[in-house]
Image (cartoon, rainbow, N blue to C red; front, side, top):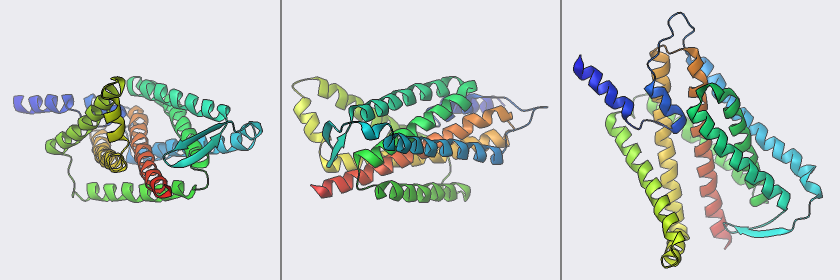
Length: 281
């Protein structure tokens, strides 16, 4: 009995999932007379957040053909090998959406009751940023967005099959590997940031991080980490449903899953952009 309790506490204190989903692993609440969480409703809510993301993409396209169309394309830059011409207003809107996405992500992670609203705003902003990337930053290569979507669907389905068939099990060893890879990426990012701030090391950091193969390797590592998070998310959802937690936690589970799926899509799109951008050179 004591060993069981001790193991349970260790599991609760261990890094188990993405920041939004991870809080579900620390909750010991049974539905009782309340409605219990169900797979079907979690699926519907996950689809809702993904559809809102699509709505954010549509919103950008509407603004791009109306409000942004009258703006002078005064900003010219190179984005991963793509020559970009855009307006200050487009960049400002995209930057604002990015900031709002970060804020609402944090709010959703720490204030569960706000997820129906904060998660919706986050998804809308992410869709807006994705549309800006696909239809402005890589204009002329919009097919990469569809290609990334197709690959993302295949990846998510493959991870779901591997998990549901028991081919991949979410054990303590699995979580340790996921944690190690994730912290390695965080460590690399921090070292790169600090190194770039130091004048002496800045040229070396720029040279290393600007190398095509290093960038590709880090992006593939990010995709792998996101896939491990997805498997962990499936396990967390199983825990929510099988332990008959209250239905109010469905929103948290759904947003956590949608968060990971969007993350996978963003990283796959980034990988394709890097590959095509490098070939253009």
